[in-house]
Amino acid sequence: MKYEADLHTHTLASTHAYSTIIENCKAASEKGIKAIAMTDHAPMEPDSPHIWHIENLDVLPAKIEGVRVLKGVEANICNSEGKLDISERVLSRLEWVVASLHAPVFWPGSSDELYDTYKKVCQNIHVDLIGHPTTGDIDYDADKLVKLFKEYGKLVELNEASFASGRTKKNKLVDLITACKKYEIPVAVDSDAHFCYRIGDVNNIARLLNDMEFPSELIVNNDFEKLKEGLLKKRPWIEL
Ligand SMILES: [Zn+2]
Ligand SMILES: [Zn+2]
Image (cartoon, rainbow, N blue to C red; front, side, top):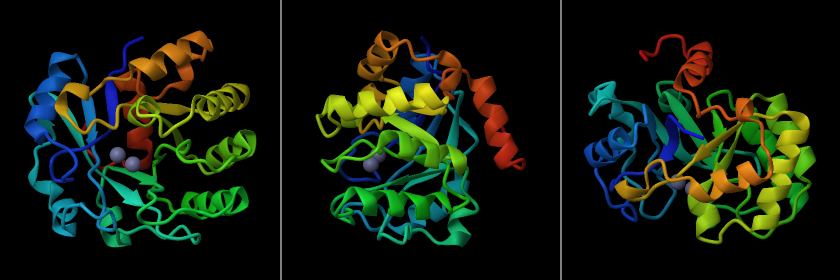
C-alpha cells in the first residue's frame, strides 16, 4: 500500500531531530509523498522550539519541493484536564494539530485517568489527531478509547517511530488496530520522522496492518484526495 501523506514529522527545530524542512520535503518528493505535516514539539517539551517557531509558520509557502506542507504542531497534553501548551489563538491558525502525551510533561497515573484525560483533549475542536496513543505501560480498554476518539471525530494515530523503538508494545498496538477495525474507526499511519530519511517510513506498521487485513478505506493518509476532503471540511480556508 502507498501512503501519500505523512501527518507527523519533525524538523531540527525540535533539537532531538536532525533535518530541515527542505530536506524533509526533498525526501518526501523522492518517495512520491504528496503532503507532510510539519509538527514540531510545542513549548513544554524540554528541547522544543520557541513558540515563535509555531506562530511564524505562515512564512512558509504552501508547497516546498512540490510537497504540500501542512503547518502544524505536536502539542503536549499538560494535565488531566486535557490542557494543551498552545493557545487557542495559535491553534486556530494552524492547519494540523497533533495532541500527544509525553512523559517529561505529564503522564496519567491510571487507565481511568488516561481515559478521562483523552476525553478532555477530544473536546478541543482544534485537535485533529491523537499522537501515538499506544505508548507507555498503562493498560487501557482499546474498545472504549477508540469509540471515544470516533465520537469526537479525532483520528487515531498508528506511529511507526514509537513502534519501531519499542515505546509502543506490539500487543497494545494489535489491540488498538483490532478495535479500530471492529468499530470502523479511521486511522492515520505516520512516521513521526526525526530525520529526513525516515519521512514516509511506516514499514513495520504497514506490515502489521497487512497481516491483520485492516481495511484500506479506514486509512486516511493513503490517498491525498481523500485526505483533502477531510481537511477542507474542517478548515475550508486552507489552500490545498
Ligand atoms: Zn510524540
Ligand atoms: Zn513526534
